[in-house]
Amino acid sequence: MAYFPETLIATRFLREGGGVVSPNERDLLKLIWRHPGLSRSEVTAHTDLTQQSVYRIIDQLEERGIVSFGSPKPGTGRGQPSPTLRLDGRYAYSCGISVNTDIIGICLMDISGNVLAESSVALRERTMAQSLDLVREQLIEHQRVNNLSEEAFFGIGFAIAGFHISGTRYNAPLPLHEWSLIELGPLLTEFFGKPAWVRNGGKTGAIAESMFGVGRYIKHFAYLSFNYGFGGGLISDGELLLGGIGNAGEFSGMYDAEESKRRPALQWLIEKLNRNGVDVPSISYMRKHFDPKWPGVAEWVDEVTPAYSRLINAIWAVFDPQAIVFGGQVPTALAQMLIDRTENFDRPRYGVQRPRPKLIISEISSDASAMGAAITPFKSAYY
Image (cartoon, rainbow, N blue to C red):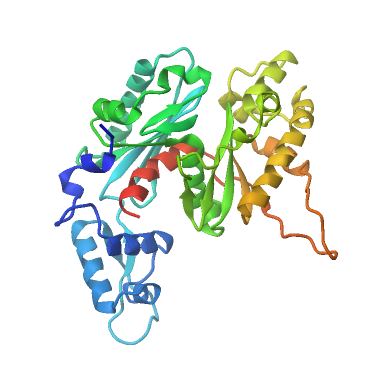
């Protein structure tokens, strides 16, 4: 039987008449998310709804505790001042879990997008059951420290490296073979007792970038997720583009078996560093301690540059983004080295070049994949 987390949402989060929010409520919540501090009287100008309908819907959302009223903006015209609007973080929170090959990132976030807690679990030489036990222990501790009630716990957002097969099944890299090709949604729901939204880690990283990073001012971009493998996501008009099967942005798919070894996957860089006498036990260690002068780094960049440049130009030609964002677990200095080596394949016509996308290093310094996983339940259900 197909797994749908929406059918498992707790009754307290449902509205009268069914569902979590109506289409009009979703539109207004999305507007408030994008413009926190917008006054109630200003909302009507951004919608096709009448002022009477806007006020009625917002009052209902406030009564449910999803939206809170703030102090009126000064000098907003004649008559009674209109309160400002924000999503009320006290209403609900979620837990984002991101499984990479060496580490599991954990992020607790409330419905307004505030990060409540972040931590991680080392994955090496641990079974899936052992790892999930440790994640649950940290979740319980975060709930205790932040005085979070079980009643306000909305759901789990879960991200995993690997491409989507069907349902909540993913084909993950070899170090995650135990997590592969199984229905993760029902397993996680049984383990945590909450509905679970399961996504690819590159896609949740793209979601985080769209909501907390460059997506605040750029609506069309490609997100490159440098991890043990290499993937990413596509954001079109501020929304994640999934494609027909859910694998849009699986950039490694453009390489054949031989080229795949020269794509910018960090597993190959770690192997080269270790062969050059640099002890790098994991990707998370490399990200924290990266030195561009390590022996093997420049050689690796030289080796991947042709395949990397072809990828950048392919994304540019096919998707035409405003920007390409370098994210995942890539060290900032390494991302800059790749950007500096980018070759532009465009051929000017009449002396005029095709406009290029900006190459931008991610603005999210913590685990973007876990953050994106945490916001996914709310983005799916509310905005």
